[in-house]
Amino acid sequence: MIRTPLCDLLGIEYPILQGGMAWVADASLASAVSNAGGLGLIAAGNAPGAWVREEIKKAKTMTDKPFGVNIMLLSPFADEVAQAVIDEKITVVTTGAGNPSKYMKDWLKAGIKVIPVVPSTAMAKLVERAGASAVIAEGGESGGHVGDLTTIVLVPQVCDAVTLPVIAAGGIADGRGVAAALILGAVGVQVGTRFLVASECTIHQNYKNKILKAKDIDTIVTGKRLGHPVRSLKTGFSREYFQKEYDSGISDEELESFGVGALRKAVKEGDEKNGCFLSGQIASMVKKEQPAAEIVEEMFTGAEIVLGGACKWVK
Image (tube, rainbow, N blue to C red; front, side, top):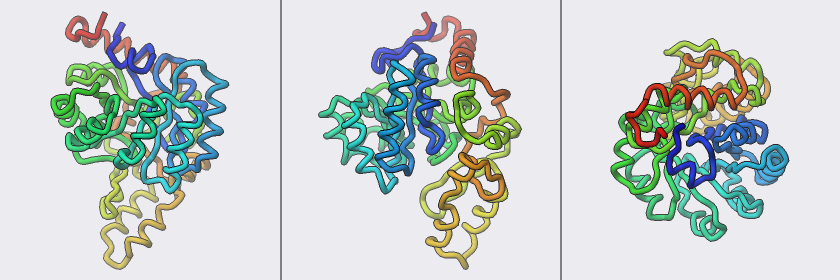
Protein backbone atom coordinates (compact mmCIF):
# COMPACT_ATOMS: atom_id res chain seq x y z
CA MET A 1 0.00 0.00 0.00
CA ILE A 2 1.20 3.52 -0.77
CA ARG A 3 0.93 5.82 2.23
CA THR A 4 2.65 9.20 2.39
CA PRO A 5 2.67 12.16 4.81
CA LEU A 6 -0.18 13.66 2.77
CA CYS A 7 -2.49 10.92 4.08
CA ASP A 8 -1.76 11.93 7.66
CA LEU A 9 -2.01 15.65 6.89
CA LEU A 10 -5.48 15.34 5.37
CA GLY A 11 -6.82 12.23 7.09
CA ILE A 12 -7.19 10.24 3.85
CA GLU A 13 -6.37 6.68 2.81
CA TYR A 14 -4.83 7.34 -0.60
CA PRO A 15 -2.62 10.38 -1.36
CA ILE A 16 -4.84 11.68 -4.14
CA LEU A 17 -6.88 14.86 -4.56
CA GLN A 18 -9.65 15.23 -7.12
CA GLY A 19 -9.11 18.36 -9.18
CA GLY A 20 -11.23 21.44 -8.57
CA MET A 21 -12.97 21.54 -11.95
CA ALA A 22 -15.44 24.41 -12.25
CA TRP A 23 -19.09 23.38 -12.85
CA VAL A 24 -17.87 19.76 -12.75
CA ALA A 25 -16.69 19.08 -9.21
CA ASP A 26 -19.92 19.22 -7.23
CA ALA A 27 -21.05 17.41 -4.07
CA SER A 28 -21.69 14.19 -6.00
CA LEU A 29 -18.17 13.82 -7.37
CA ALA A 30 -16.40 15.21 -4.30
CA SER A 31 -18.18 12.86 -1.91
CA ALA A 32 -17.53 9.87 -4.18
CA VAL A 33 -13.78 10.54 -4.27
CA SER A 34 -13.70 11.08 -0.51
CA ASN A 35 -15.62 7.84 0.05
CA ALA A 36 -13.05 6.13 -2.18
CA GLY A 37 -10.27 7.19 0.19
CA GLY A 38 -9.00 10.31 -1.52
CA LEU A 39 -9.82 13.96 -0.94
CA GLY A 40 -12.81 15.16 -2.95
CA LEU A 41 -13.11 18.84 -3.74
CA ILE A 42 -16.13 21.00 -4.48
CA ALA A 43 -15.11 23.54 -7.11
CA ALA A 44 -16.44 27.03 -6.47
CA GLY A 45 -15.44 28.28 -9.93
CA ASN A 46 -17.41 31.42 -10.72
CA ALA A 47 -20.36 30.35 -8.58
CA PRO A 48 -21.71 32.56 -5.77
CA GLY A 49 -21.23 31.74 -2.12
CA ALA A 50 -24.80 30.51 -1.72
CA TRP A 51 -24.26 27.76 -4.30
CA VAL A 52 -21.02 26.68 -2.61
CA ARG A 53 -22.73 26.54 0.78
CA GLU A 54 -25.49 24.36 -0.66
CA GLU A 55 -23.02 21.93 -2.23
CA ILE A 56 -21.10 21.71 1.04
CA LYS A 57 -24.29 20.84 2.88
CA LYS A 58 -25.12 18.17 0.26
CA ALA A 59 -21.66 16.64 0.51
CA LYS A 60 -21.95 16.39 4.29
CA THR A 61 -25.00 14.15 3.81
CA MET A 62 -23.15 11.98 1.27
CA THR A 63 -19.87 11.32 3.07
CA ASP A 64 -18.45 11.32 6.57
CA LYS A 65 -14.91 11.50 5.15
CA PRO A 66 -12.81 14.67 4.74
CA PHE A 67 -13.51 16.81 1.69
CA GLY A 68 -12.52 20.32 0.67
CA VAL A 69 -13.37 23.30 -1.52
CA ASN A 70 -11.40 24.68 -4.44
CA ILE A 71 -11.56 28.46 -4.80
CA MET A 72 -10.84 30.08 -8.15
CA LEU A 73 -9.33 33.40 -7.11
CA LEU A 74 -10.32 35.20 -10.32
CA SER A 75 -13.99 34.67 -9.48
CA PRO A 76 -16.06 37.78 -8.78
CA PHE A 77 -17.47 35.84 -5.83
CA ALA A 78 -14.09 34.89 -4.33
CA ASP A 79 -14.61 37.05 -1.23
CA GLU A 80 -17.95 35.51 -0.30
CA VAL A 81 -16.75 31.97 -1.01
CA ALA A 82 -13.68 32.63 1.14
CA GLN A 83 -16.04 33.44 4.02
CA ALA A 84 -18.36 30.54 3.24
CA VAL A 85 -15.64 27.93 3.80
CA ILE A 86 -15.00 29.43 7.23
CA ASP A 87 -18.67 29.50 8.16
CA GLU A 88 -19.21 25.92 6.96
CA LYS A 89 -16.13 24.69 8.86
CA ILE A 90 -14.34 23.30 5.81
CA THR A 91 -10.96 21.90 6.85
CA VAL A 92 -9.13 21.96 3.51
CA VAL A 93 -9.10 24.63 0.80
CA THR A 94 -7.22 24.52 -2.46
CA THR A 95 -6.82 27.64 -4.57
CA GLY A 96 -6.12 28.33 -8.21
CA ALA A 97 -5.64 31.13 -10.74
CA GLY A 98 -4.05 33.63 -8.41
CA ASN A 99 -2.41 34.48 -5.10
CA PRO A 100 -4.46 33.49 -2.00
CA SER A 101 -2.47 35.63 0.45
CA LYS A 102 -5.29 38.11 1.17
CA TYR A 103 -7.41 35.29 2.63
CA MET A 104 -4.71 33.25 4.33
CA LYS A 105 -4.80 34.91 7.75
CA ASP A 106 -8.53 34.33 8.20
CA TRP A 107 -8.38 30.79 6.85
CA LEU A 108 -5.49 29.81 9.08
CA LYS A 109 -7.21 31.36 12.10
CA ALA A 110 -10.22 29.15 11.31
CA GLY A 111 -8.00 26.05 11.29
CA ILE A 112 -8.22 25.53 7.52
CA LYS A 113 -5.36 23.78 5.75
CA VAL A 114 -4.62 25.84 2.62
CA ILE A 115 -3.11 24.10 -0.41
CA PRO A 116 -2.58 26.47 -3.35
CA VAL A 117 -1.99 25.38 -6.95
CA VAL A 118 1.34 26.85 -8.06
CA PRO A 119 2.80 27.13 -11.60
CA SER A 120 6.30 28.17 -10.49
CA THR A 121 8.85 27.98 -7.68
CA ALA A 122 8.38 31.70 -6.97
CA MET A 123 4.69 31.23 -6.21
CA ALA A 124 5.46 28.13 -4.16
CA LYS A 125 7.88 30.10 -1.97
CA LEU A 126 5.38 32.94 -1.60
CA VAL A 127 2.54 30.74 -0.33
CA GLU A 128 4.92 28.84 1.94
CA ARG A 129 5.78 32.13 3.66
CA ALA A 130 2.05 32.90 3.91
CA GLY A 131 1.39 29.68 5.83
CA ALA A 132 0.27 27.11 3.27
CA SER A 133 0.10 23.48 4.47
CA ALA A 134 1.20 22.06 1.10
CA VAL A 135 1.33 23.06 -2.55
CA ILE A 136 0.03 21.55 -5.76
CA ALA A 137 2.65 21.84 -8.51
CA GLU A 138 0.56 21.74 -11.67
CA GLY A 139 2.15 21.34 -15.08
CA GLY A 140 0.81 22.68 -18.36
CA GLU A 141 -0.46 19.24 -19.39
CA SER A 142 -3.48 19.74 -17.18
CA GLY A 143 -6.92 20.90 -18.25
CA GLY A 144 -8.32 24.33 -17.44
CA HIS A 145 -6.02 27.19 -16.42
CA VAL A 146 -2.41 26.21 -17.18
CA GLY A 147 1.12 27.51 -16.75
CA ASP A 148 4.12 27.14 -19.04
CA LEU A 149 6.19 24.46 -17.28
CA THR A 150 5.53 20.76 -17.70
CA THR A 151 4.86 18.54 -14.70
CA ILE A 152 8.10 16.58 -14.98
CA VAL A 153 10.08 19.83 -14.94
CA LEU A 154 8.03 21.75 -12.37
CA VAL A 155 7.54 19.14 -9.63
CA PRO A 156 11.19 18.44 -8.72
CA GLN A 157 12.03 22.15 -8.80
CA VAL A 158 9.18 22.97 -6.43
CA CYS A 159 10.24 20.08 -4.19
CA ASP A 160 13.71 21.60 -4.01
CA ALA A 161 12.40 25.14 -3.47
CA VAL A 162 10.11 24.58 -0.46
CA THR A 163 9.95 22.42 2.65
CA LEU A 164 6.19 21.89 2.27
CA PRO A 165 4.64 18.64 1.01
CA VAL A 166 4.29 18.85 -2.77
CA ILE A 167 1.38 17.35 -4.70
CA ALA A 168 1.91 16.75 -8.41
CA ALA A 169 -0.77 17.59 -10.99
CA GLY A 170 -1.04 17.61 -14.75
CA GLY A 171 -0.84 14.60 -17.06
CA ILE A 172 -1.56 11.97 -14.40
CA ALA A 173 -4.12 9.33 -15.31
CA ASP A 174 -2.87 5.94 -14.13
CA GLY A 175 -0.43 4.13 -11.87
CA ARG A 176 2.54 5.09 -14.02
CA GLY A 177 1.75 8.75 -13.50
CA VAL A 178 1.37 8.29 -9.75
CA ALA A 179 4.67 6.41 -9.60
CA ALA A 180 6.45 9.10 -11.63
CA ALA A 181 5.11 11.84 -9.35
CA LEU A 182 6.37 10.08 -6.23
CA ILE A 183 9.79 9.46 -7.76
CA LEU A 184 10.02 13.16 -8.67
CA GLY A 185 9.61 13.99 -5.00
CA ALA A 186 5.88 14.59 -4.63
CA VAL A 187 3.93 13.03 -1.76
CA GLY A 188 0.68 12.77 -3.68
CA VAL A 189 -1.18 13.61 -6.86
CA GLN A 190 -4.12 15.70 -7.99
CA VAL A 191 -6.19 14.21 -10.79
CA GLY A 192 -8.88 15.96 -12.81
CA THR A 193 -9.50 14.68 -16.32
CA ARG A 194 -9.81 11.01 -15.40
CA PHE A 195 -12.52 11.80 -12.88
CA LEU A 196 -14.60 13.40 -15.64
CA VAL A 197 -15.72 9.90 -16.55
CA ALA A 198 -16.42 8.78 -13.00
CA SER A 199 -19.93 7.37 -12.70
CA GLU A 200 -20.67 9.93 -10.00
CA CYS A 201 -19.56 12.85 -12.16
CA THR A 202 -22.72 14.71 -13.19
CA ILE A 203 -21.49 16.37 -16.39
CA HIS A 204 -23.44 15.87 -19.63
CA GLN A 205 -22.86 12.52 -21.32
CA ASN A 206 -21.65 14.33 -24.45
CA TYR A 207 -18.73 15.65 -22.40
CA LYS A 208 -17.83 12.18 -21.15
CA ASN A 209 -18.07 10.78 -24.67
CA LYS A 210 -15.70 13.42 -26.01
CA ILE A 211 -13.14 12.51 -23.34
CA LEU A 212 -13.47 8.81 -24.14
CA LYS A 213 -13.03 9.43 -27.86
CA ALA A 214 -10.12 11.87 -27.56
CA LYS A 215 -6.76 11.23 -29.22
CA ASP A 216 -3.36 12.26 -27.93
CA ILE A 217 -3.27 15.53 -29.91
CA ASP A 218 -6.87 16.54 -29.31
CA THR A 219 -6.33 19.40 -26.84
CA ILE A 220 -5.57 23.06 -27.50
CA VAL A 221 -4.50 26.02 -25.36
CA THR A 222 -6.42 29.26 -25.79
CA GLY A 223 -6.53 32.52 -23.82
CA LYS A 224 -2.83 33.42 -23.89
CA ARG A 225 -3.66 36.83 -25.33
CA LEU A 226 -5.71 37.67 -22.24
CA GLY A 227 -3.07 36.31 -19.87
CA HIS A 228 -5.10 33.34 -18.67
CA PRO A 229 -4.32 30.33 -20.90
CA VAL A 230 -6.75 27.42 -20.74
CA ARG A 231 -6.42 23.88 -22.08
CA SER A 232 -9.50 22.24 -23.58
CA LEU A 233 -10.49 19.73 -26.23
CA LYS A 234 -10.35 20.83 -29.84
CA THR A 235 -13.87 21.76 -30.91
CA GLY A 236 -15.46 24.26 -33.24
CA PHE A 237 -15.62 26.72 -30.35
CA SER A 238 -12.01 26.34 -29.22
CA ARG A 239 -10.66 26.56 -32.78
CA GLU A 240 -12.71 29.71 -33.44
CA TYR A 241 -11.51 31.24 -30.17
CA PHE A 242 -7.91 30.43 -31.10
CA GLN A 243 -8.32 32.15 -34.47
CA LYS A 244 -9.90 35.22 -32.87
CA GLU A 245 -6.92 35.57 -30.51
CA TYR A 246 -4.72 36.42 -33.46
CA ASP A 247 -7.25 38.70 -35.14
CA SER A 248 -6.21 42.32 -34.60
CA GLY A 249 -9.73 43.39 -35.50
CA ILE A 250 -11.25 42.06 -32.27
CA SER A 251 -10.73 43.78 -28.92
CA ASP A 252 -9.76 42.00 -25.71
CA GLU A 253 -13.20 42.80 -24.32
CA GLU A 254 -14.91 41.22 -27.32
CA LEU A 255 -12.67 38.17 -27.09
CA GLU A 256 -13.42 37.74 -23.40
CA SER A 257 -17.14 38.14 -24.04
CA PHE A 258 -16.99 35.45 -26.72
CA GLY A 259 -15.90 32.88 -24.13
CA VAL A 260 -18.40 33.74 -21.41
CA GLY A 261 -20.54 30.75 -20.44
CA ALA A 262 -18.81 28.31 -22.76
CA LEU A 263 -17.72 25.93 -19.99
CA ARG A 264 -21.18 25.78 -18.48
CA LYS A 265 -22.63 25.01 -21.93
CA ALA A 266 -20.29 22.04 -22.20
CA VAL A 267 -20.83 20.73 -18.67
CA LYS A 268 -24.57 21.19 -18.31
CA GLU A 269 -25.86 21.09 -21.89
CA GLY A 270 -23.24 19.05 -23.73
CA ASP A 271 -23.23 21.78 -26.39
CA GLU A 272 -20.64 20.51 -28.86
CA LYS A 273 -20.82 23.64 -31.01
CA ASN A 274 -20.60 26.42 -28.42
CA GLY A 275 -19.19 24.62 -25.37
CA CYS A 276 -15.66 24.65 -24.00
CA PHE A 277 -14.73 21.10 -22.94
CA LEU A 278 -11.82 21.49 -20.53
CA SER A 279 -9.45 18.53 -20.58
CA GLY A 280 -5.87 17.62 -19.85
CA GLN A 281 -3.54 16.02 -22.37
CA ILE A 282 -4.14 12.59 -20.86
CA ALA A 283 -7.72 12.39 -22.17
CA SER A 284 -6.69 9.75 -24.71
CA MET A 285 -5.57 7.50 -21.83
CA VAL A 286 -9.07 7.45 -20.33
CA LYS A 287 -10.78 4.33 -21.65
CA LYS A 288 -14.06 3.85 -19.80
CA GLU A 289 -16.62 5.29 -17.45
CA GLN A 290 -16.41 3.72 -14.00
CA PRO A 291 -17.02 4.48 -10.31
CA ALA A 292 -14.60 6.86 -8.61
CA ALA A 293 -13.57 4.11 -6.17
CA GLU A 294 -12.41 1.90 -9.06
CA ILE A 295 -10.42 4.76 -10.57
CA VAL A 296 -8.59 5.43 -7.30
CA GLU A 297 -7.90 1.75 -6.61
CA GLU A 298 -6.65 1.09 -10.15
CA MET A 299 -4.28 4.04 -10.05
CA PHE A 300 -2.65 3.08 -6.78
CA THR A 301 -2.54 -0.65 -7.47
CA GLY A 302 -0.82 0.20 -10.74
CA ALA A 303 1.62 2.53 -8.98
CA GLU A 304 2.56 -0.14 -6.46
CA ILE A 305 3.35 -2.54 -9.30
CA VAL A 306 5.50 0.03 -11.10
CA LEU A 307 7.36 1.18 -7.99
CA GLY A 308 7.92 -2.13 -6.23
CA GLY A 309 10.50 -1.31 -3.61
CA ALA A 310 11.82 1.75 -5.43
CA CYS A 311 9.90 4.26 -3.29
CA LYS A 312 9.93 4.69 0.48
CA TRP A 313 6.18 5.34 0.51
CA VAL A 314 5.35 1.78 -0.60
CA LYS A 315 4.74 -0.31 2.51
